[in-house]
Image (cartoon, rainbow, N blue to C red):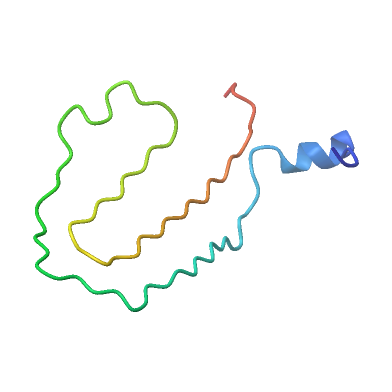
Length: 84
């Protein structure tokens, strides 16, 4: 798991640190596609779409044709003392 950090340095980082930059690099390509007589329509999320869901949820919707859909998510987690 790597080298441990001493308690003094860990205490200095408690409660978070400044995030300078986050990058997600997505490189997708759509080439030489054709779509003939394509009928696209509506899509919708209903009122109960996320009932009983847990964690981080994402939704990607598409009503088109020959579409490249890319999605990326960066989650920064900061651990802190739960007492005020």
